[in-house]
Length: 109
Image (cartoon, rainbow, N blue to C red):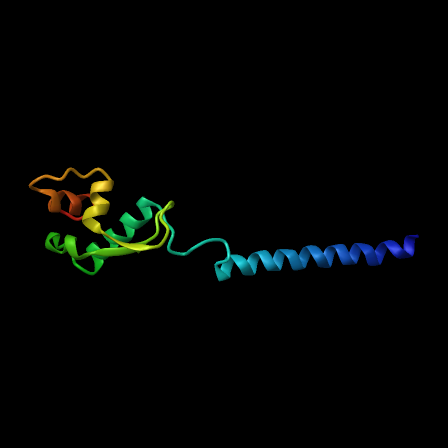
């Protein structure tokens, strides 16, 4: 019986190793969810990064910045504007909305 236990232990170890490799490869390939699904905070930060780096914090560009995102509960990913994301984050829709939205993104106004 002792001679039989070694091959069975080896089979179990190999099976566990294969399972771990499958899980790791599925993670890197994207088998654990949609890459476009993100939270409001992640979408807001992505749009703000665009405002800061590409648009140089130009408040007039806020209506033009869009992020393709699929929020939980939405059937398909769609484009959401930075202005919409600012309102969802609680920036009041006032006369100075563009400046307040830019400030929420970390722009120096």
